[in-house]
Amino acid sequence: QVQLVKSGGGLVQPGGSLRLSCAASGSIFSIYAMRWYRQVPGKQRELVALITDGGVTNYADSVKDRFTISRDNAKNTVYLQMNSLKPEDTAVYYCNADIRALLPGTRNYWGQGTQVTVSS
Picture: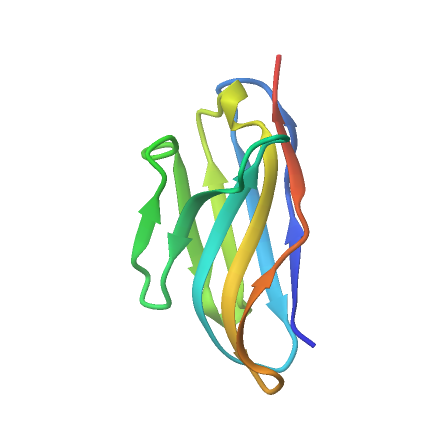
């Protein structure tokens, strides 16, 4: 069974940095696009960044030039480096990936959320 296991997150002061990582495990054949979302209570989940299997990246306007998404295909892991953090970046962050596995084929997977709090 495929799982996405996250690490990172926590409390940081404005202007600080955090790195999130998310590793996929299981009987995986291929991982296609990998994404990071975030959600604030009462609001819709927002796509923060994505990276294709070819390494093409895209970012929400609110995080451009501050956040960097990357992936290590050998480790089936996606990262989100977050710099110059602002209080409005406070949210629960989720990783998401399109994965082709032995069973049940190709489908979309979500990791568990991790809280990122930016506050002095």
